[in-house]
Length: 260
Image 1 (cartoon, one colour):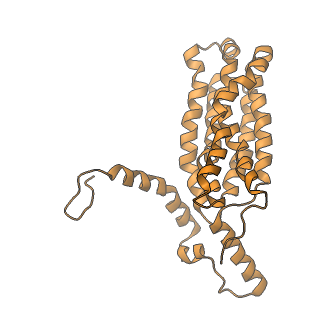
Image 2: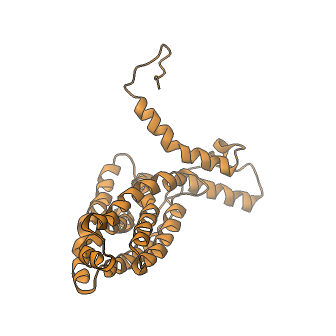
Image 3: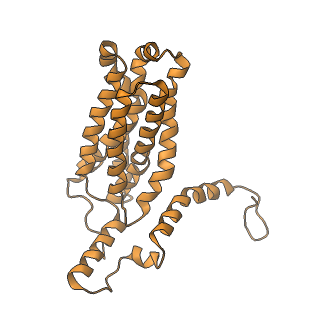
């Protein structure tokens, strides 16, 4: 069975529809820098300590991508669920970051929101690859990357007027509003994972016909593995890839295996 068309929107609109969420996440890293002066005055911290609110975001992007992004390769979950659920939580924690009363709490909440935004950054390119052929993908990926990579530069530009007039908290309010809009975009973005689409189609056919022989390729590959086992295998995949990458160029044993 061939996958259903992932999206019904015009082809040139697809990468632009994927652009707002990662742009918003990247805006969130630098937007607070516009309010450093008022943040330092309110919490009584130094300039170096204030930069921690930016640094923890960079750390969170990596942790979130490592822990949550592999789940998008599980056919039973697909990509949309791993986009929407973290982004909804992002909005909730971002509201807390705007109202927090301690510097340590602000850093923790900034770390959590960055972790929740990590999957959008790491998997957006995979969604573009789901929708286009290898020939068209470089062009469409470039269209998706332009707004995404502009986020860190645009954040302070958007926030400076509000920060100067009302302090650093308004930078967090602006990010909250932007995150709400980006999350709404994700809510209306159809699933793009081919394996998930085929799995859902097979499930519908079994329900309509009562014939249990209708199975998707992902179900055949999964076999008798429990869902927990599938999640575990997906979670360790980044470490396996990293280890394989590190082994390239290392001295080889008599059987071609890398020495570790």
